[in-house]
Image 1 (cartoon, one colour):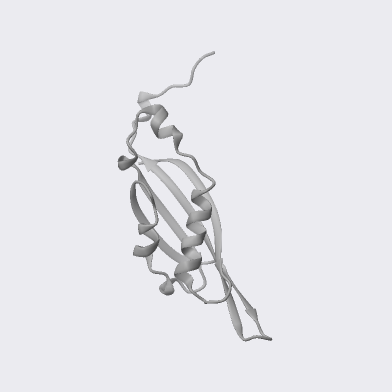
Image 2: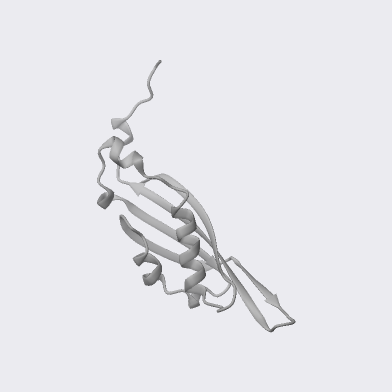
Length: 120
């Protein structure tokens, strides 16, 4: 599999301390930066795409990776949740704002020998 696209995003849950919500928002942010016209232009089927998602949050065990994977509109999803992101503590109000980061990779099983750069 060759990585064709890498997009990054950030998301948060400011009031509910919901790590899955912050992760989903980070993935949606990454997806909104991307347009996959490459697939249509080259004749690839989106169903053949492997989508690798890495989520960074302070409490990885609090993210439901299956829910995050269900938000991906195309391809075969693999979600890996790791330590990262940021928690911002509001001492005055006793709350925590959760900030998640996401990296979304679109990969295809291609043979690089099928392609060459134009000599123009």
